[in-house]
Image (cartoon, rainbow, N blue to C red):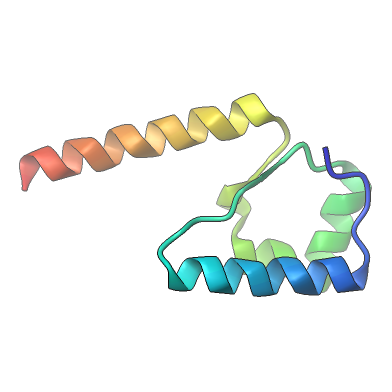
Length: 79
């Protein structure tokens, strides 16, 4: 669970996201509390990472990951 994010942490998350994206790796966060959501919106973290990679719970994040894997596997089978 993420309980707080300051501007330095927000900048680090944006930088980490960019580094991982360059390696074709997705960064997702789960368990983000309301005050942290607000800070992430305000600092641009939400826009950089993408709302589709931010989850209220771990189970929500895992379910989204598994759904994406199923879609990817079906696309690979068709090719």
